[in-house]
Length: 167
Image (tube, rainbow, N blue to C red; front, side, top):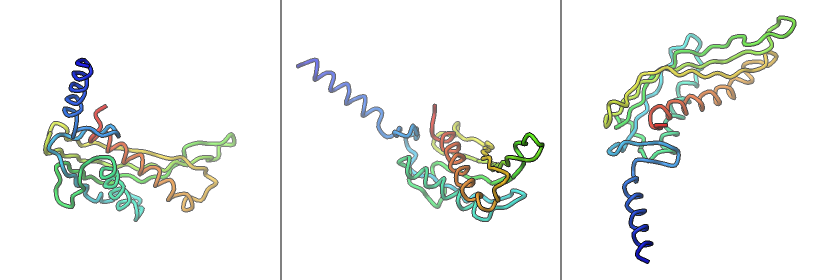
């Protein structure tokens, strides 16, 4: 009986010591950080998708809100994400046996500035880039929104992981 009580007490202490800074998504939020702000990413790419800036910014806000205990703030949060869209390019990515383009690639590149007011050593400035290939026989305008959604999702995961997941 005494051993069970000691084990239970140790387990309770361990859980109490770990509370507040970790979530089941792997996010490690520094103690004291309560809010996050995500600025709208201006689009400085040579080709501009008019919905991309808002989609990227909204999806980042949603990811932090749903996967952490942080409150999304319109003002400057304890954690701050800002940046810009620097690339939105389509290029040939594969040729067929007859030297014709068989696949095209949409690449989106963003530059991110992250500020952690609680732990400034976690600050970073980094570029992230993701792409999706699609058949050259497909009309780009018919597949663009699906490709953008997939790429933005991956970019958001990259930013989230760099900002708050310490693997």
